[in-house]
Length: 121
Image (cartoon, rainbow, N blue to C red; front, side, top):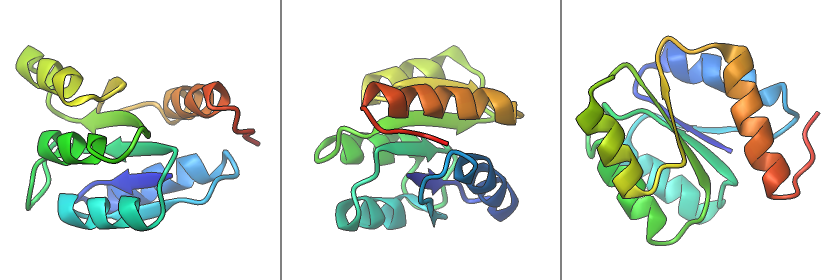
């Protein structure tokens, strides 16, 4: 699992929430780092912020889709319809607004892992 967010506090919170599913979580603070990590250790699920300091989350998602079939959850404070549409066009599977419910995030990611036949705790 890969958590991508430029805000360290949010990144840590998401990682803690997802670690409760008994999965290994890697973290990235920007898009290019996320792509490098995803190539080196292909994740089953990626949580991805749209506002990243180098390439934005939409471009990160587009590039990720060139080599990965990971389930992508966009986690963002942006709520404009254009952002949701861009997320869908780049291949994101789910769009969640910040602030998000940790329980809802665990449920979404747990369901994605179960669809892929991966057990969760």
